[in-house]
Length: 404
Image 1: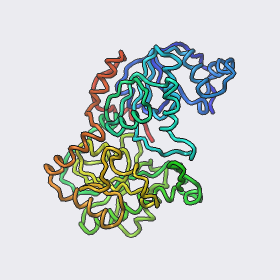
Image 2: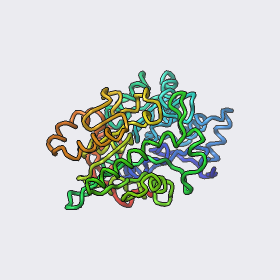
Image 3: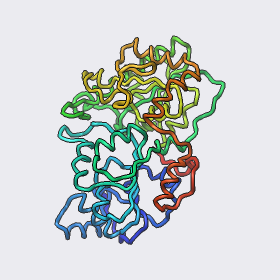
Image 4: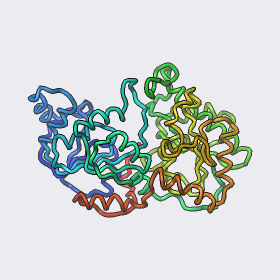
C-alpha cells in the first residue's frame, strides 16, 4: 500500500480505477480530473481520516469519503466488475455515471460462496446503479439485465473500445496463418510453479478448478492447430496474452508444442493483440473476449468452447459459444468439444469457406453477440449526451497505449 498525502480538492470528473485510462483519455479531454484507487493499493490519508469519523472501515465508506471530498459531476469506469462503483448513485444521486464493460462476464469467481453476478443482484435492490452502462453487445447486455433487473440505466452497446480504436494490418501477400488466441493467466515473472496443479485457481459455482485443469484446453487446441498447420504447410502462431517478460506463457506452449513449428507473439502493450493480426488470418479461439471482438470485425474465426468439457464438467453450458443467445452447442464454425476431429472440422470450415459465404453465415452472430464501432463514434455520442468534453471519433494514439 502507498500513502498519498495530497489534499483532495473538488474536481469535475473522477475516473474510477486505472483500468482503461489509456483508451478513455484518447477520447475524453476533461482536465479537471482525479483517479479513485482501491485503498489497499493507494490510501489517501485525508480520505481515510474522514472515513474513520464514520466508524465504518469498509471500502464503501472509503469511497463515500472520497466522493464527499471530491464532489465530482461525473464518474467513469472501465472496472465495470467492481460493485463499489455502482454505489456512486446511492452516495451522490446527482452525479452522472458511466460504466463501460471491458470483458465478457461469467459466473467465475475466486470464491465458492459468491460471484460478480450474485454481488450485483444483492446491491441492485439497494439502489446501486449507473446512468449509462455501455456493454460489449448482446452478451454483455444480457448479463446486465440478469444481474440488475431494477436498474434504470440507459444500456448502449458500443463493443470493446480498444478493438474499435485500432486498425488491423491490411491484406498482404504473405503466407496464410492459423492464429491461436491464448488465455494464459498472469503468473508474474516466474510462470508456472507447484501451485499450478495443486491449488484452486477459480470457481464456477461450488466447483473449483486448478489452473492446470482450467487451461488444459488451451494446450490441447493449440497442439491440434499446430499439427493441422504443418499438414497444410501454413504458419501457426500463438497470439500471447502476456508480455515477453512473463516467461510462463511461452514456456507453457513450448512444452505442449514440442517438436512442432510455431511462432509466439507476446502482448507487450494493450494494443499488441490487435496490431499483430492481419485481416487475412484464420483465428482459433476458446472463449477469450478478443475472439468475439474479432468475429464482430468479420474475421474468420473458429470457436472451440470446450474449456469445461475438457475439465470434466460438460454440464456447465454457460461457457459455450454465444451462451445464452446461441443455444446450439455445435455449428459450422463452433464446437463444444475438443476432440481432434471436431477441432479440425471447425478450423477447416473457416479455412475453406468463401468470403461471401462467411459474411452471410456469421452475420447473425455478429449482430447478436458483440458490436464493432470503428473509431468509437457511438462512445463520443454518449459523452456528448452526458456533457463530457471529448476530441471526437478516431483511432488510438500510440503515445496513449500503455505497456503491459
